Image 1 (tube, helix red, strand yellow):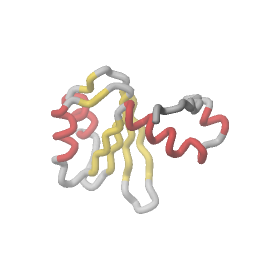
Image 2: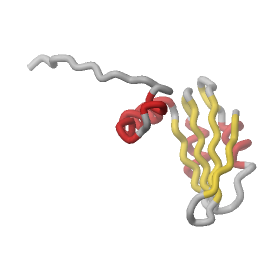
Image 3: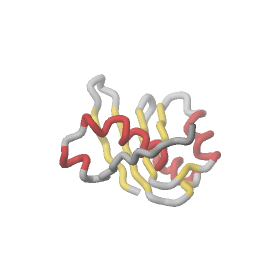
Length: 104
């Protein structure tokens, strides 16, 4: 797991972490949240999935905003914002649209 600290425009501290576990246990999320201060924003990205307990833990936070992004959401966001990325950034996850005819 890699954690990165970022500073936002509004004096709020943001922390981003990534993990590639298949099923991310709640303990991993709790370890990440332990480095967050009150009113911090946390972004946890995994190429795996989150357990139900991890989703519940993130949702129940009162003083911190935790956003969980699993592989499906990561691909959705990539597709949604791909046209805004530089060519160099797009090459990190090259996707090509595939078109097919649907039966009528």
